Length: 170
Image (cartoon, rainbow, N blue to C red):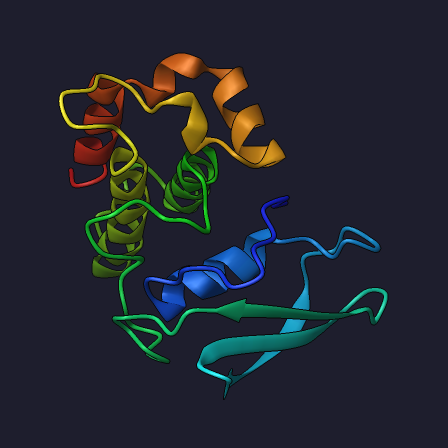
């Protein structure tokens, strides 16, 4: 669930946009399921969809991504932190992705899934300021992100994030 609802959000990639849409619940019923259609609209990438549960129409406008434009194989983003998905959400996504792979699975498919988990942790690391040792408070702007931090604030310290990221490569 995401309570950050920008009128014209900065999108780094379409992969990031799709994740944002997956994390953004319907304001009327709370469902996160929708079929999205996209087009270019007055210089913006527009996604329009109806909630799968209640039928409520939703529309989101994003700056056209600078990489992975309409490419499902793109990474999450460039060198700067996300403006769509907050640090807590990224770590929850990494946990969810990694949790889908059994610890003893060394298959090519498992390695590919874990690469996405590693990328999600790398997105959290982008919020750590240069010479900083933790993700700052302002990197948590959603209820879900703040709740993730409150569960275990130490998980957002640089050393732990690096250890988790690196463990997803093993």
